Length: 182
Image (cartoon, rainbow, N blue to C red; front, side):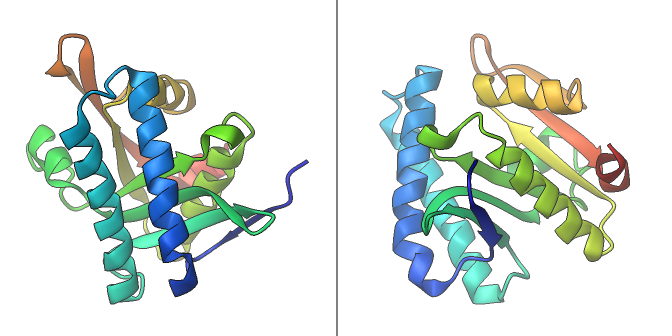
């Protein structure tokens, strides 16, 4: 049984989080069969680092991260912020007013142990406590899409071949009170 701690990141966590993002994103690209897309990989890492910086600069207003730790080591992350330009574009601005929950990352050595679910539950409660009733979530990764479909059902938006042949993009709109009752 893991002795999991979930908390807000601190300034001392930044370097470890940057390494964590690189580890998880590199592993994801490898498992997705897209590790050759080095530019996209680096852009994804930079985006997550910018999100983290926005969290610290805004005191959690513009972006809000939670991290999961085991034995003092970061093994998971989740964050929320404004819907991305991609979500806004793909939903024809229908989701532009929603928070987006993203950066749901679990270290490869800790995947499939319920850590992502624990992070999601904490984020549901965080948003609910701020009187947020809905959020959106998207994915272009096949493995993640399988998880989200199992957890949330079919996406509200399905962009076939968005990233290339058989590389779809999916977007879900989720109701927090419903998720908290499940």
